[in-house]
Image (cartoon, rainbow, N blue to C red; front, side, top):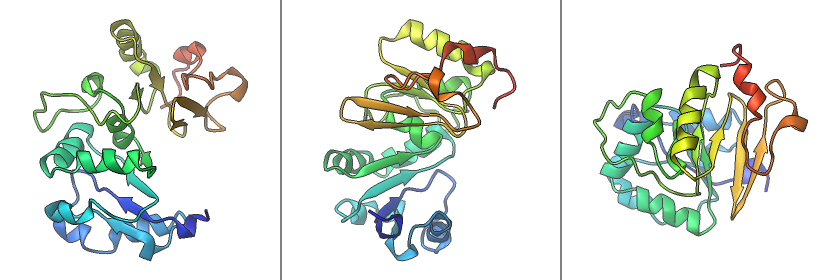
Length: 203
């Protein structure tokens, strides 16, 4: 499908105001990447029930505060709608906090994102089995080591520009060209090579 034909539900982060959600701000942002503005639907949290049965191809949650964004989704009752869309085959696209939210649990994110909303239940959307550490760098290596010691779930380290694609039980890892040598990446698990932990210049 050409990107210009993709029908996208844009799910704003915790900072989006009602005025912004009802403007063309986010449509224009998506159009810069090749989508058609008329195919971008922006979730209005204050009328979330109107967005639970749309004819869409993909949904997107970008960056922001992980806890406050997910709490906003929960408070407006939209988490089940996201799961239902995913079960129907709608593609979920998450960047930064949107990626963290897609996994099973968010507690490890406390190490590098402020819990501004006082979240106490850290269960996430659970769209796939695993947890993500986005913006991975050497300073987040202790979080990775602690987390892998505490859970038997896969833990995926993603540096800026890296991505993973999850489809059924398959996880494919796509490093950015300037981040790592493809030949050293574990494409089966999506995990970075352990040698990366000594690379202190990446952020």
